[in-house]
Length: 125
Image (cartoon, rainbow, N blue to C red; front, top):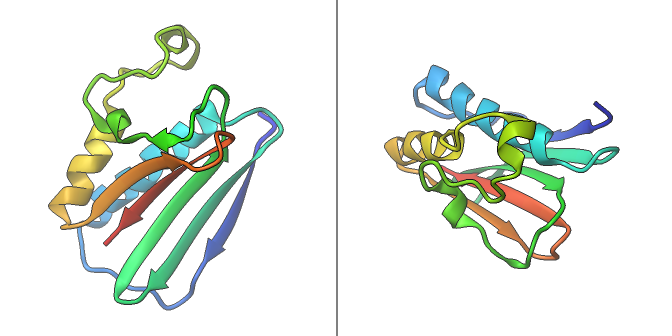
């Protein structure tokens, strides 16, 4: 694999929640980015405090993107490209699991591409 994970983690952020489930969300988003990021590209992970909210983002370059809202990715069993099934494995439920965990913690999760080159997943608590 020829991808680098670049982190920007603000210090002093605390959150009350189920640690195991929050780790699962982070794992799902990182796994997704590693699977679908372009070769020889960076995966940017950021955790910041924005006003009174905690914002966690995972951003990566990807192929075949359009400039649009990608929230359909959170639907169970949704696969953006059926030809990817055999290449990347998985069942298309990871992001829906992540969404249910985030909602359980009274947060929001979204996915967008603003330039057609990069996709960004944002979790806000």
